[in-house]
Length: 159
Image (cartoon, rainbow, N blue to C red; front, side):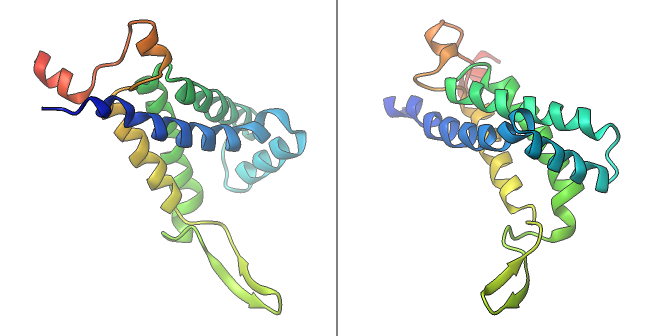
């Protein structure tokens, strides 16, 4: 038997993953310096149309994060964010190894850091996959409107 509290399990994932995405998407959309810095990084790694892609990534991350927190279209939003994280992992972070702490040297003030590895991308992906499998859970926009996404167990029962 499934515990009644299971419906609450996706809530902390939605809040933390969504807030993280909002945090990373905000400067790409609403800060000229943040947008230009990200577009410059995309140019450096050879991404076509870096200015447009910077806005596109910002839209996916910012609004996708807001939708996760609200519990709206969690499954579909999670797929877009997984693609976002996979692209970031393979184009930016993979060459830097696994660890998000990429220590490149030491200075008198302490360690110096380079670009992070793909560790955090994998954590985001794992959390997003968990949301796809579990459904949107309690206190979600979708469940409030009677359109709650099915959990993996409900999908199996219906099959």
